Image (cartoon, rainbow, N blue to C red; front, side, top):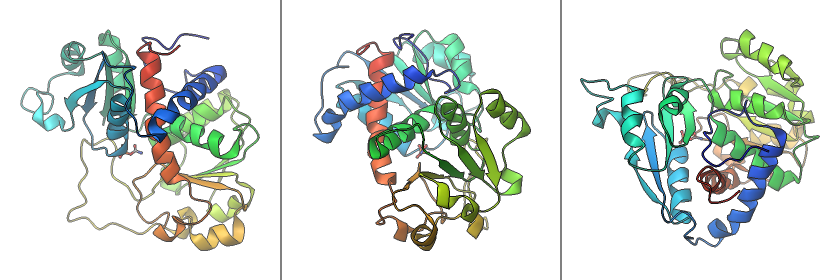
Length: 318
Ligand code: CP
């Protein structure tokens, strides 16, 4: 297996099966630190740089929390408008990361342009972690989700998935690539104008992913062991910021909504429900206290997964 030390985490297309399990093993080893709300000193001599060109609550703060849990330092920006990339100069990714690499030892980047973290990785001499790029990928989120599944179900292989939402979404792309390494049939349910692109479907076939598409969650929920939901009412991920003010925001049609009634009447009793959040109305709040919901556990696991990735790419764990 390739070492993770010094590696970029840009895409799950590049991940091999044993690498998934290695990351999960490291996460499990580090998890007690987060469970006991301690800060260790494993990364005391390292600094994380956060370069966020798009809003984020979870991805940025989970990386920052993970760095603190391992005793490291954090610097960076959360609003590119306050940097030279967001003013008159429109400073390029190359020029920006050529600076950032001297301010720390690893960079986590979220960007509205698909491929921006890959461009950064071309120029940086330190690891780049993709925190979500346009409609591209969101690898650390799906690693978190798979780790959650492994913890909750004791296995990943053999589970049937239902993925609901906008299939242009970066999490869906990382999920498709990740499941190519596991024995997991998956049904995708999305509005027609948000369906899997022909290009992505060709890739899934090339990677031997066992997938089908359906129009309504009711057509697939009964077989699902894992239900992963994303909004269909959501901002444009190719923009640096998409404000809601003044806009009419629609409700989620029943086809793409996981309600408490649907879970009680149609879902497997032991299925688990994931949502990377933020949500609109696709998972109503009365689902939160049902036995299916696992999104709060998923949020905790998001810190643990980022601890594992930071420890690995910074060479603190092999
Ligand atoms: N799940 C996720 O990526 O959330 P944020 O946009 O808040 O980072």
